[in-house]
Image (cartoon, rainbow, N blue to C red; front, side, top):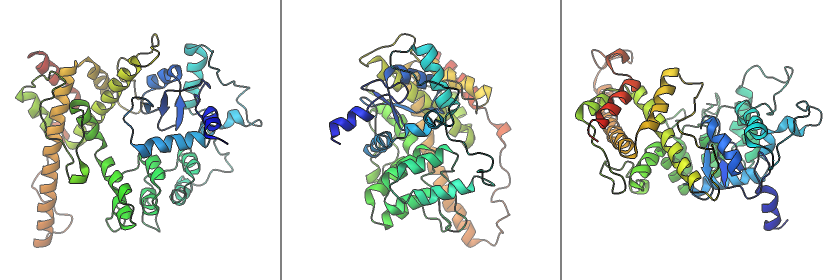
Length: 406
């Protein structure tokens, strides 16, 4: 089949069949039209990770992974029962491009992607004693170039961070050693930890490097800093040069955004956050950056749909109500305020990284020089979470502080 014919078959919206889709769902590995994309965005990144094919900031291997899976039938994984004549969902019909958006298409997309209503579910007789069997199959699958098998296993619940009890490695170690770049990209999209260690403390990047896959090793290292890279690019329009050993951009003023100044009190509250709350705040800010950039890409697209805007982060039912409220309040920050928050987050990320490195070095020295058992604490006391402000309180403080000086 010629490339032109292949493109005419696969480059259609995975949800309604519209031609010339301009978007992709990275974790569903399908292409989407503008209308269906607007529904995906309203579901949130925890359901569908949307990126523009024209304006999105893609790594070449991630885009190739999505296009390869889209061409090889990834959509059939999410529509399994619709395609099975013996297990149809009451004659459920897939939408057509001309169908209405906010009834026919929206209902179908929610069923397909939010509820996973059409994904294959094994019968009770086929269900194994636990999910380990699926995860072990994934552990083997990622050494091959059969991406669709890996995606199918992941869709059914295989753990991308599964630690094989006998081989003492994770799927990411296996894919990295085999040089399966697209398998690595797929695992990372589904939450594989690029810094996971095997039983001997070796990371996936180490496996790739030892096997001679240097570009893949550098890509895995780059993924370690995906969050801070995304925040840096939003403010400074550039990323650190990881190949030269630069992993964080030192905080500085941006020429493109009028940055507000955050008072010292708010900065101290940020520094006082426990690591877990700090990581949650950073993850929420990352999602808000994604929302704002995707919104901007939608407004610059060839077609601007009415009522297609996503004005704040959609509710994630896996998070607490308090955290969801805090996430939505991020939309209230004007560009200068939001950039100021990101700059201070990057500064504190660097501070915490330096402190962590120093602490590990001290701990290693103590371990080698002392006769303390592993159960003995290195410090007399550790502050509890009750001694710190919550992320919600920090956001409130930042908002009040920023508004007082702008």
